Image 1: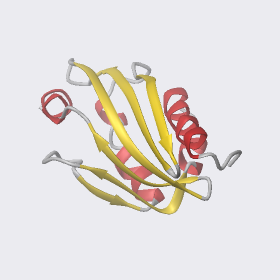
Image 2 (image 1 turned 60 degrees about the vertical axis):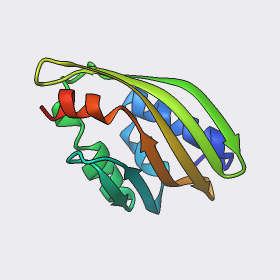
Image 3 (image 1 turned 90 degrees about the vertical axis):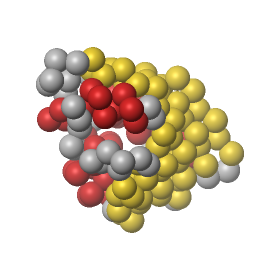
Length: 133
């Protein structure tokens, strides 16, 4: 990890997702991190631990998207202490022929230079319709 500044940690993570830098994505999380994705989708739950978050939650999105079509854009970040609110857009073509285009917001808590927890908010109706038809 190159920085302990919470805002820089989150920006580094989002840019790593955008750039497909899997090693940086994995390194961004604390071993005991959690990611809460609310709603009633197949991915809606609290994901526990770096491996579950990276391999099962984030990794489960790959097979739903046409390779090379994912575009991530960081819209804004706000930080106060160890908490960072990040807003980003995600766009891709799905394997079902649809267009995924969602604006997401995550509340990140950073501890000792790594992401310790995330609560993500997105348009779950759009996620259901396009990624889980």
